[in-house]
Length: 119
Length: 110
Image (cartoon, rainbow over all chains, first blue to last red; front, side, top):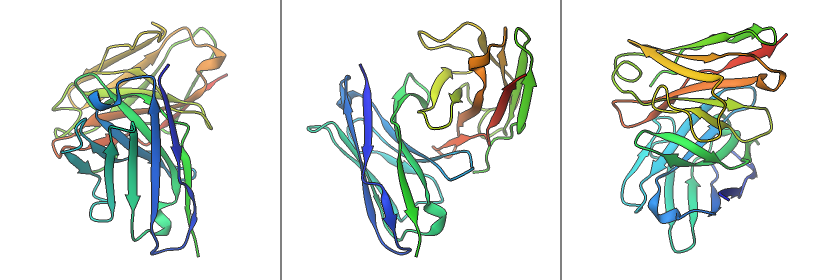
């Protein structure tokens, strides 16, 4: 069965960096676009970024553009999110999710990893 | 990209039907038939229940249905059951090559 497992979350000071990973299994990872979505405490879902199946095309939310980089290693079925210049507004649970169908539908999600930006 | 607009909460009794609206703009909901709906129980992974406006993934109950008119999409949950109590989010692809979510709606089964 499809499984997505995020890791790398933790407590980090403002201005520092953190790298999240998402290990995928149960499907042919290299055939699917992958997304990151986050949820701040008490808030709704917010889309963060997407990377194409081959890793050559990436799009970002305006709130993270220039600070976050999404990437993937298809040989290891792993998705990454490099987060730089973190601010308190980046505090959230970060989910990786798999694209489904022709639209940007997300049919499988991980359980999420919590990132807390605090001094 | 502004979030799509959803009511903060809706409620209904078991067996009843409720509808959750999702209002966007001509740059997202009104332009593309790429509206999805997710059910999210706190502490769990969100679950895709409707995609491309009105399609259900395999295994999703036919009590969930979706529709769209202009810039407003809707999710209807019929035959309410206790396990339907959750947060529901709509999303849409946008003309900026991004994905925008609604603010979320808490469904309470009375």
